[in-house]
Length: 462
Image (cartoon, rainbow, N blue to C red; front, side):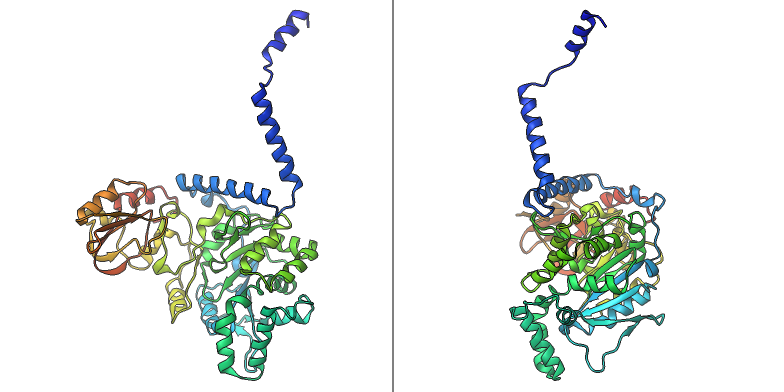
């Protein structure tokens, strides 16, 4: 190559400007800081939070279900490849039999463990699923104390509260035990998460997936199998319904927490010192699900918020069918502790062999078809918006129901349901719809055209 050619080649190479060098330098500095800081450091947590915000925005604007209908790379048999941990307390112990009956109704016969915060009663035996499989029960806090995992913590207030409850149960002082169970149940719950996982890892190892639920949580087996069949259980996974700020995002325990066997192996087999730290923190932790998440963070396992829209923290009649979840499978219900709510849900979904999708709730529960609102947009004495919050919109000084219908139509992508309250002259609308509540004197409806458009974009059957 001659001198002229070399000069010509150099002229084609653009040297970075000073501002570009500064930007590159800042990015390189941030990259180095990110990789040198501990897994649970604020900088890492901040960057991950921002990434999740961007990802959530994209999924909200461009929802898709394409990935669900590609061939599964990791198909599972829920009854053999999954272990279930059901948490209960003295005050809610009567819910357990109903929760297990609901699992049996949908033939979800996975290896299951019930963990509680009080000694086993004299007449208390293992539970049994409908197929005859036994479900063991353990006082998980007592187990953790006996093996010395809480050594030095015996005088902690929360540990002493457990001791008082255990003494009352052993002495058969039922009135005292009932009072203590109601007052301190939520505190003792924070001490169940880590030891429950450690115990199930010791007694039910080598499962592909582990699911932790409350005694008022219902998991839809077919929806769960559809989702997990696309995830590699040989890699550490922690998924659920995210809550909390950037310093410690964690999966809402009531919506159910799903962990791969690889995640538990990495925690309990490779990092016993981190587990020990978590046990020491449990007597003072506010939320056990957050303690679980921050413990995983210390070893580089973070809550994956990609699947946040699959989990639900409400009972069916309060469930919000969001615009961006219409085509996605629904994995869980929560808040089924009252009366026969769990049994009712168990019976409703008893014969469901196919995955259940958010938009199908109306059909399952006999609510009006979405498209019926195109011809008949207004329903009297009904509310299809439900509970109002920061994600709903309220317009004041609306005097007629037709005005509320017009407002909804003016927000074609942001109004799936609306409710008009003539007494307050208010119009409420939201990007979701519920099955419908009776609301005397109010008018409500669903944006049938938007619902029809969303349904047509789904790959799953209606």
